[in-house]
Length: 57
Image (cartoon, rainbow, N blue to C red; front, side, top):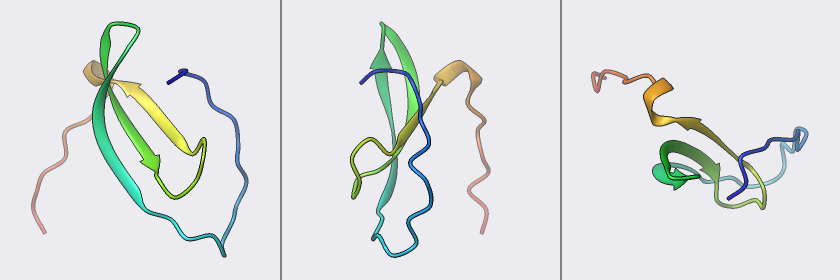
C-alpha cells in the first residue's frame, strides 16, 4: 500500500463493499478503510489519529 490519495470520482452505478481494518504502513499501524469492489479506492489514517466510535445503535 502506498499512502497517497487521488479522487476516483462518483460512480453511483458501481457496486461497492466497504471494509475497515488495521494495517502497517511504513512500520506504523494505520486504520485503512477500503471499497474492496474497486481498485485503488481506499484511505488510511494513522491509528493514533483515528477516532473511536461508540458501538451503540
